[in-house]
Image 1 (tube, rainbow, N blue to C red):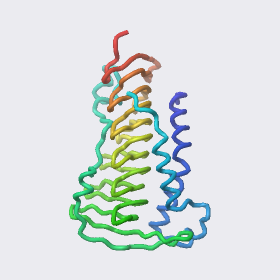
Image 2: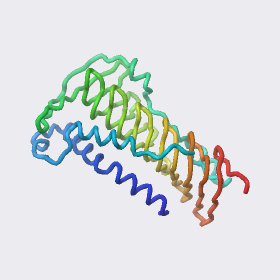
Image 3: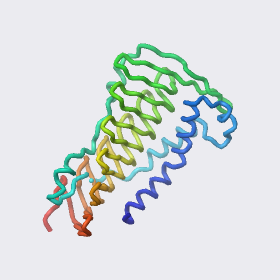
Image 4: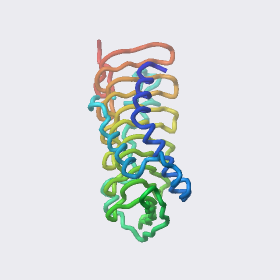
Length: 257
């Protein structure tokens, strides 16, 4: 594991581990309706504290710089060019607004410290289902969104949009875990591809952006600057056969020395 990848992971763990642990614990308790455990867990964050940590996490971002997922070695081009940094979620911001609900019901009340958390289920006309908290009739707080096509999001919502920290499971087998801003992947995140490739680093508007590392299944590793989903700026490509290329990339192309 390269030193920079270790630094990314250390930074990532400092930023999200505590909040993720509390989020997973609280949400699992929601699903299990384990009220007694909730009452006894005095160390758990309350709803507002979880939201506060997640919102603060959104601010822990690198300044947008330029990075992507393609090796410049000809033998690897076909496989690596098949990946896209901006894998889209099934529901856009506009879809959330126009997706008409056909049924809403309160499915659980969870006593938590000095408040009660209300968990609703909403069935939508297109077959989607939401289970989680609401605020002013909008998805807000912890929730799970089940898409009709089999995709799923677990995490935080704000004003009816995915916002804060969460995990998105794609039907193709990809998985994104990290920061969201108003329905888009933005901030720090990890995108695991179904092929075994992995990207760790910055995102902006659903695309790789800033400092990031792409680990290829075949053992190659690229680390450097990304912009709009492509390598743009200084970078380093380490091949599995120990060769190293350091240089400047523009729109995924290594520039002549």
